[in-house]
Length: 64
Image (cartoon, rainbow, N blue to C red):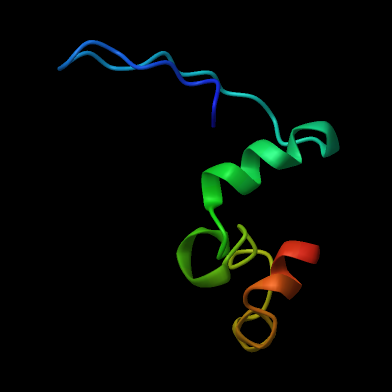
């Protein structure tokens, strides 16, 4: 997220919202961090049955 500029103390930084497209995947990786946000979720918890989500938490969710 190197595009965020430092704001004055107490001020909120500018925020841009974009859809996640293949071209913007790097932005999502930067936002979620190395482990995919919450326990390797990669926003897959609501798309999969619980057992499948737990089996593929982390890298497999990221690939999916």
